[in-house]
Image (cartoon, rainbow, N blue to C red; front, side):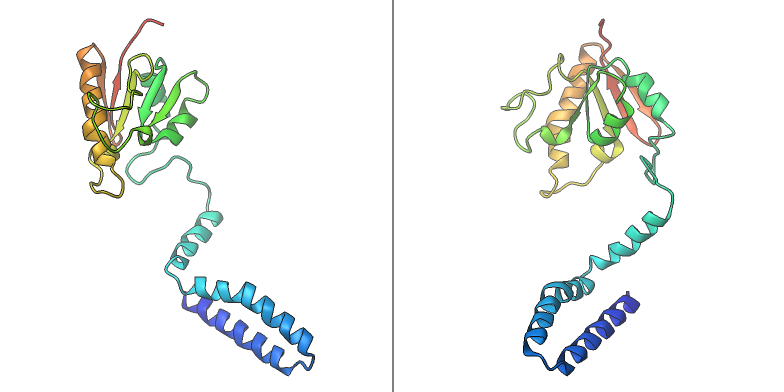
Length: 194
């Protein structure tokens, strides 16, 4: 971080001394314009906390890709298990919708995201009617969802407690099966004749 800052300052200093030594007022005005529009934003961004992420981004581009890998759980290693659970599902509700869409890409399974659920109301009293047996017959409930952060910023806990958890109980009451997946959480599947 410090090296990048020093390089930017040297670059800025060099360009400003070059501009001041040129005699043409038109050229000097154009050069100042380019510096203002190009280099100044880069300098401001360099001093912002977001530059700390650039180091991680550069490291990620140099290393081999880590697709669908989490520190606590790897979807790659459990893909077959997930497919065996959800291969007969017509609709899956999950927080990890992007990953599940990749896992179930060869199936006619529809993947639904928990963020389509409103952060208000509850399963029994809501304008939202997306949790129906003919639409969502499987729930993939990760530990991140069920034990995740609380707060007004994400409303994740509100969606879980007011919609997902009651719907899980509803599925179980009509004969769904509950499976535990180590490192991920649990899977609730309603077996139906298709």
